[in-house]
Amino acid sequence: MKVVYFAWVRERIGKPEEEVSPPESVRTVADLAGWLAQQGEEYAYAFENPAVVRAAINRKHVKPDTPIAGAAEIAFFPPMTGG
Image 1 (cartoon, rainbow, N blue to C red):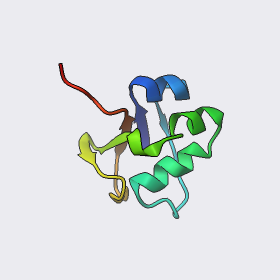
Image 2: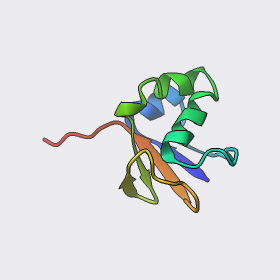
Image 3: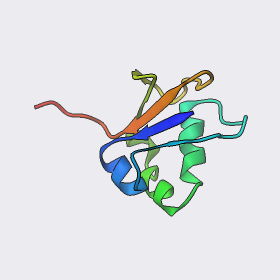
């Protein structure tokens, strides 16, 4: 699946996107964030506080407990503010 990173999540990881193949035990957005956090120092830094990282599956905002099965693209980004 394709994972896309935005704003400071992208800056901390050091890349805008990548293809990943998480293990079958990774079933939700929260599972994926936790698995990514174990993939290296830069990922651990990006996901050090998962409560503030938002996600979207196929460009639709989702909650951490949303299943990722069948997702073509998952994006991670910080909270957005208007103004």
